[in-house]
Length: 155
Image 1: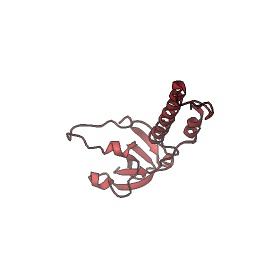
Image 2 (image 1 turned 30 degrees about the vertical axis):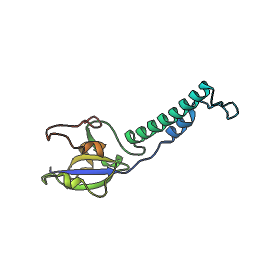
Image 3 (image 1 turned 180 degrees about the horizontal axis):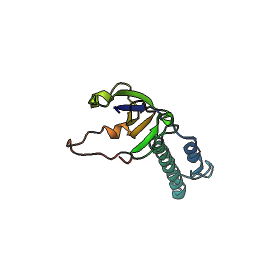
Image 4 (image 1 turned 90 degrees about the horizontal axis):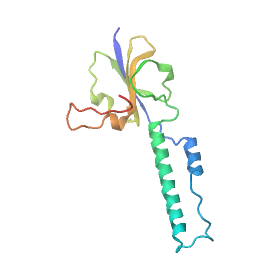
């Protein structure tokens, strides 16, 4: 049958609760203000270490939230026979018959999400015959040459 192209987008960007908890658990204990002595090199280093660890944990949490969108069906690589019912968190942005040539302009717009899923399904089916997803910024990153490729989420 005739296949249809589907472009889905999501704007989910949340910090998972487990990452918030980890931010509190992994910190080095700071010395009390009474014990802090600016001339004590060890105390100064402990404070600097604690601040650096806090920044690292925040960056890890941000990276985790981007790489593992919570509540969104998001898997690595090319997928086959994906039921549309499990595409929670995705909104259909573009839908056209397969014989219509899809252009970049068709899937770019003001309603840009953080993630994009592209897939195709057979007419009348509730399954995507093939699908892949990734971070929109990486998927549409310009390359130096039109024949260069970018790897995103295993595709």
